[in-house]
Amino acid sequence: MGYSRRSLLAAGGLALLGLPACSVTGDELADDGSGKVEVFSWWAGPGEKEGLEALVADFRQRNPGIEFDNAAVAGGAGTVARTVLATRLENDDPPDSYQVHAGLELDNDIGAGYLEDVRYLYDQQRWRDRLPKGLVEALTFDGRIYSVPVNIHRANLLWYNPAVLAAQNLTPAGSWSQFLTQAAALQAEGVLLLSIGPTWTQKHLLECVLLGELGADGYTGLWNGATDWAGAPVQQALTLFIKVLEQSDVVAAAGDWQPALDKVVAGAAAYNVMGDWADAYLRTKGLVFQQGYSVVASPGSARVYDFLSDSFTLPRGAPHRRAAEQWLIECGSVSGQDAFNPQKGSVPARLDTDKSKYTGYLAQAIAEWTDSSTRVVGSLTHGVVAGTVRSAAIDAALTLFVQDKDTVKFAAAAAG
Image (cartoon, rainbow, N blue to C red):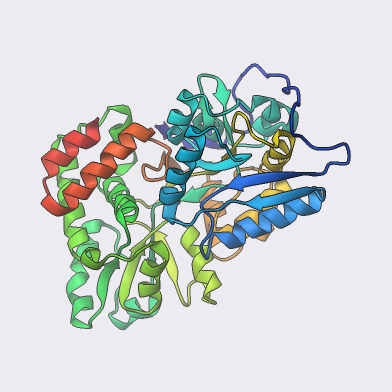
């Protein structure tokens, strides 16, 4: 799935038929607006929970009669949370709303009939006029929309410790090949080139290597069939990924993305590849952007925005349906997004928020996101370009690939 910059930034939405708001039955808000809403997410760790807390505070101020039940489950990128959620949905025990990534990640839940179409909220709140058209397209399945985006994240980023690089007279590499040439100088000083975390962070690294080596068109072609996984460019990129991984601490990988980043902060590692939620985490440690830490696009991907978007749903059978609607309205609102995103390390999904609230790294991010010359592609690891079945197959193949380094076998599995 690829998106032109013009498509993503054009205000307005798809010409969809609006649905009327569903009638409210069962356990719902009382006349005075009292009620409860259980919201399921994976924002439980430092650098994530602060954003959720800010969003919830704004929600409570705007909805004083609704009790917020935080059902967050810890685990990077939602890997643990999605397992817990799947069990609840299968057992007909849905929360009132749950977090997803915009894009094909929702295909299985839609097919299983777990979600309600929320186009009526898009009509009511005029969200199509306030969101990038391409983002609305990424949220749309057969003319229906099943989630509300609260932000935009960038995946293709290389975080580094400026003091570590300065000590070796190094600057962030512009290509992955150049990146590898820095390993020897750093190793001589007892510094690791790259810190890494669990399997999902290795998949995130793979995504960034493929993007840097194949370019935006070649990377997008991996997901729409235009790029041959068995072809020489992909095979070479996969070989390079293994070489990069060999210069990391993959043998003793960190338990999640935060402790992997801690190694960069401590100067034990020079670099970490992670999305821009890393900015929020690093700020919680009292670090100042471009002093204690800094960032560039991952090698070979300058001027490309590998995007993902955190979104929330309305499950069928939500116990507190009207309160859930109020939560979705909060997620899609200017006040909600401007409360949440500066804390989360992301930029707003809406185009009409207050840009003055975004400083440091986020000022740089919002400028690039809204720049018409920026090329946008969708994240593999974070649900945009691959559905649940294909993504799971890539996960399984990647676990073996890291061990056996068989590029041909991995490519065959990833091609689907």
